[in-house]
Image (cartoon, rainbow, N blue to C red; front, side, top):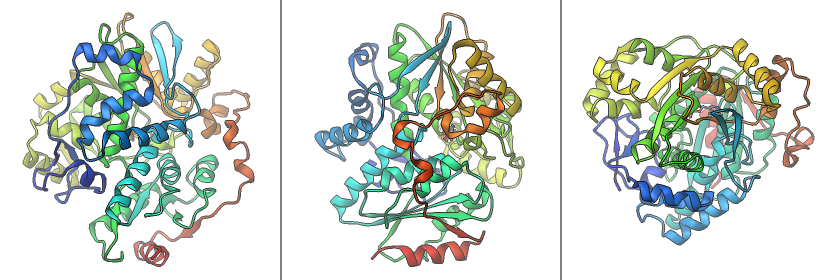
Length: 465
Ligand SMILES: *Cc1c(COP(=O)(O)O)cnc(C)c1O
């Protein structure tokens, strides 16, 4: 299987190369040239598969022989064995046709473990085979960083540098990053906001002169194709548990960078009967405005109770646009150039296509807390603020009563105690057992100024020989 860029000018890559790449050389994102599809009979048979077997079934065509099947199976088994629920992604019913898919049983308590625990192991496997070393650089508003560090901590061929905005991530999130000890792990607290961190990562990918010549730079944010690929699996897992292919399923997805929900769109295109995909955003509602106004415009960042969705630009939306514009790379390059100038107006044909599958809702902090309280009242189930936004959007999306609506529960509530308090709940939100001593563990972190040269020189002097 070949991977092609959304802007049409970068060389096509195979799976192994796409794994080791960030942005394509033309500034685009890589997508599969064609998608594997599954027949109704094949989807029916998935109901008998446990999570690792299903992951193997879905992922194998994307890897396309780059990793022998038996090695891939071992990597997948090892990845999901670390999850602390034997179903890996269990469903919980909240109301008549409302469900949550709990995606927070991985080591760092957010859905990002599904992709990043796998990505770390895939990278290590491929680098070992190539006898190659790389540097990972990533920006995080909290959850990506800890999942990436956890996924790469045993990788001898990777030095990992994670930038987070100093004093702008929750204490649990920070400690999950800074208490993982290893001489290949570096946490940089930047005296700036998340966008500043992101800009430094982007600039470093654009000009890599600060790195030793033999080191590639690898991205772990959701522009990395392998992350999207891993996330397709749980859409199938949930839908078949609720009766697919005979019955359609709707999904509500707390959305920031459009990575997680884009995986749902791919599942739909691979044959899964999906009734609707609901884009659930906080007040940083760029995607909700795209769907309702057909235009995309940047607005200032707002800090909310759901910090993992506090972003102003959703980079993976470009992958959907590529399909909405008939995979015309030149048209996408042209559109995004206009965004750099301020605003993109989308064609009505493209937007009509988008609206045939996607709906959207914007949920503010007050409604988020109200939903956490209401769900607790209704069934004594405690939602984290991101998942609460998804549930609120699911309930207001107007989905027919005979269609199960699955909200992706993207994080464990213990990660975000402020929102739980904001909901007026005095429940002690305990951390799961393996993290009970998190607040006693020593932290390691370097505070650096909001300055690219300072960050790059720190990195250059900390990369191992
Ligand atoms: C990253 C994250 C999201 C947003 O996911 P995207 O793929 O960026 O849309 C939602 N909730 C939580 C808890 C997250 O960590």
